[in-house]
Amino acid sequence: MYVVHEGEGYQLLQIDLHNSLKNYNYILHLKESEFTVAIDPTDAAVTRAALTRTGWRLDAICTTHHHADHVGGNADLQLHYACPIYGNGADAARIPCLTHPVYADQRVMLGGVTWQVMDVSGHTIGHIAYYIPECGVLFAGDTVFSMGCGRLFEGTAAMMQDAFARISALPPETLLCISHEYTLDNGYFALSIDPHNAALRKRMEEVEKLRAFKQPTVPVMLATERATNPFFRCENAAIKKQLGMEQDASSNEVFGRLRALKDSFKRS
Ligand code: ZN
Ligand code: FE
Image (cartoon, rainbow, N blue to C red; front, side):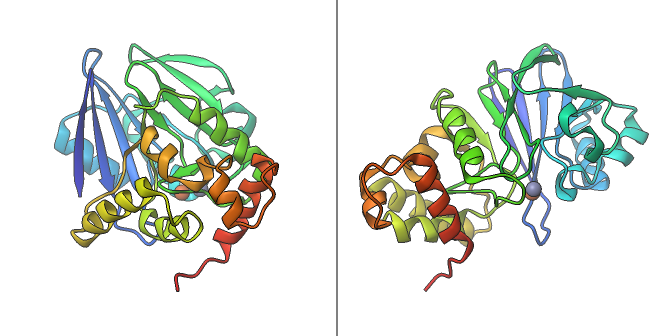
């Protein structure tokens, strides 16, 4: 299933992989340069079918982290389109077919716009995000999910909390291109620890309706996540109280507690 999001100067194609991990893939097409970038292609055949439909030629691939559901399409797409593959040079050994290593805090010109590389380690070490200020779009891989966050497979809660703090400082209208449809389950957890949050309840009503019709709940605006995602709200007094934590508990401590609780959360 495809959804096209029209932005100023770009079109963003979202592909629902309909796989067990509930991946979404994104293909960004910059109108002026007619430059097309696949971000974290899961499956080359799916990406090629989408490109055939749009008529776009693939000019580059950007990788956020090494997991198979984010790099699975790299090798075949590179073979077919001879396109460069960008990814974290600090994690080069684990990113298939990497041709253009980039590093945290680097700015890369790609398709006539600037791509800012952010280190967002936590889910993996060497996980990066791509922020494109001209488009107001962030590709954050498995860092931020709507109302949740990625699992800490390699990094620490402190690393992930630091990543969240830096993402939170981006403009509130930034569009977060989220990689998995985990919103509903995340939302039930969020409600369990932030039950009086009116913005969260409203978002959950929307999400339940969207999912009833199998519609995607992402991309989502950063402002919405800041108001509803507990992992962006580690300073919140009501959340600390609900967790039974002291009001002077640090954001790192709150984040770590939230992540641990989410790991074992079962909807009652
Ligand atoms: Zn991952
Ligand atoms: Fe993933």
